[in-house]
Length: 115
Image 1 (spheres, rainbow, N blue to C red):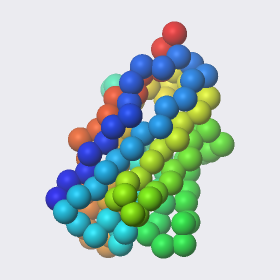
Image 2 (image 1 turned 45 degrees about the horizontal axis):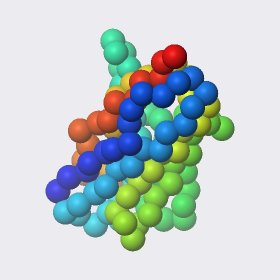
Image 3 (image 1 turned 45 degrees about the vertical axis):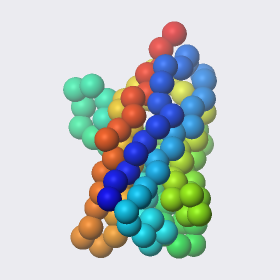
Image 4 (image 1 turned 90 degrees about the horizontal axis):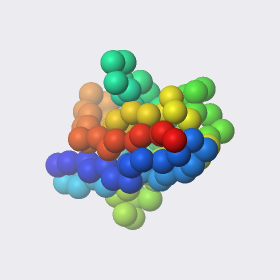
């Protein structure tokens, strides 16, 4: 049972990245999926969520209009498309699978936005 993130890296301000998170060992399609991030010296913060049904999705105000969460249940994958990246988006990005009291975290992928 695990989540594995990928797609992080170094990008210039204004650039784009797409993060991926692949789940295995559980019924991915049944779980709500979220992205969180943690910047150096700061608390982990919620970024976006997508529900297991209905394609309902929500984004934090700080990323609204720039980040988009999506999922492909056939590939057991959740994505975070990030455009117009800012220096303040620099963080380790984590995905989380959650359903009622159950939750599973990935190991994180580093995103650095710098010129």
